[in-house]
Length: 352
Ligand code: KG4
Ligand code: ZN
Image (cartoon, rainbow, N blue to C red):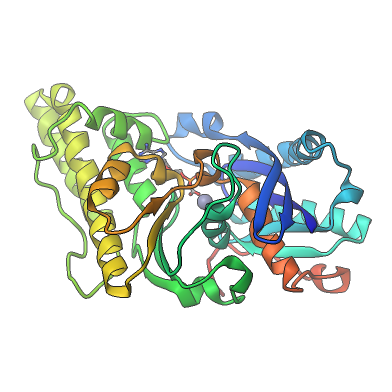
């Protein structure tokens, strides 16, 4: 059994969590998150300097709050896990520096965590409503967040994951915008506040999905990669045309329904195709876009296997998924002690 403190500051959520790891159970005892969404909203997207300055203000309060909620002291923690890549470099450095300081002062092991491994791990967190998830392997993981769109083929449970698993299991990814970014950028063009995914989802429910023909990136059958930048340009041109004709406001639900389908089509087609090709036993959807109602409806109709979603609180950026990834690494003997972790750095990119 181990108790892990997780810290996540890679983008616009400042989050800390206390997690209990016992056999296959990864149970968050607390999650404290300060979301910066309202701070970035006036700019229509995340401003890196605003993000890192706010993380500096929030990092201590969220850590103390996570400990208090779990009714624990820092001495009760066995190891500290922190996101050190990829993300906004100034934002990551706040979390990494806080984690190093606590680990050094309290003589605790430190575990650097890749943010995307955290998103994969979110599927294994114990839910207060449904308990510990039972995922059948092999499984296809569709990771659809604001910053990343990946397809992974996962053969076994986290306890057996190698340090290279993220790279080894990756089958496809977006070569430009992420799916969430496609929602957010097209929503911005259409005049919705940041982040726009939920507004498109809401409007689309009243619209005609076939009203406008919009491009599907990388249609080729032999590629599991995605591309959404062409769609963004097509929506921009369409919005300009409708605006000139004076019909944009009236056509908004149809535009949203059509563009949502253009984002979902390649995601669902490639995820189900890979599932059949690999004879996978389940599909797992992680990341903020997993909240999309049409994605859930379509997967219910189109998936050949059961589809699993983590609780929504685990889908968006949070420190429990980072603590979980750290807990697995810690149980495999990967914690760094001070002579090693003092050299630990943060990296903006996924790999170096
Ligand atoms: O996982 P997340 O916090 O992002 C990153 O880790 O990068 O997810 C946020 C993303 C945003 O792009 C947001 O617009 C999108 O998830 N999102 C949605 C919905 N709810 C949130 N996209 C489509 N439909 C939704 N209902
Ligand atoms: Zn994320």
